[in-house]
Image 1 (tube, rainbow, N blue to C red):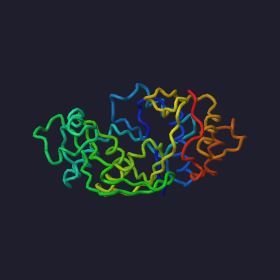
Image 2: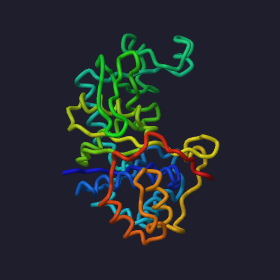
Image 3: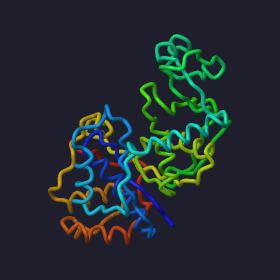
Length: 291
């Protein structure tokens, strides 16, 4: 069975780019008669915005994007992340690192990590990060939208799994959670394409089930900046929901019938599920989203 998910971080409310990712993920799951799950990726408390989690949930409900089952919260799942890290330790696929960015820059001339602590283990056990030891020479996969993707050893680094502040890194948490939740299809923005290679490396290392990735284009504002919470993208409102869904479908290349422009959300979603065509999603949006 197809099992997809939407996994926003509560660092702010949903913006139009978030709506596109949620809608594409939802329609892909429903058109394949699959499940669509909701997970709140709240593993970085310092970046959380007050009230964002509830606002995200209420916005999805207002737009008719109803998920299956209970909401999963990453903040409640530290134990399974530790189990995964322990497994990687046992298999010599992770190691402690004490290098600061300043030290890496001084040593290499860039902030790209040089795997120094693999051959020079730190003597201290505090104030360290845990890094993944990447032994793969090459990694290739097919993105259902962007096509063939590959990564060789020279393009990859030993990325962080657990931070100095003992918070879990995104790549480990989402990989472990996707497997635990049975997720086998991930539809999201192409700003996360580089993370797919790290997740696939972890899937191999932890012997987890395969996941199919689909990365849609990201929306930019009138200045050419990616719509994001960091760039202060305005939150979507629950006014004119039908029109916003229609606009999202247009950007996703779905060519919705003009009669849906102001239709009820349930009618729009039902027709969109029936007519969903992932092959029509453009590699780049032709218009920007105006703030």
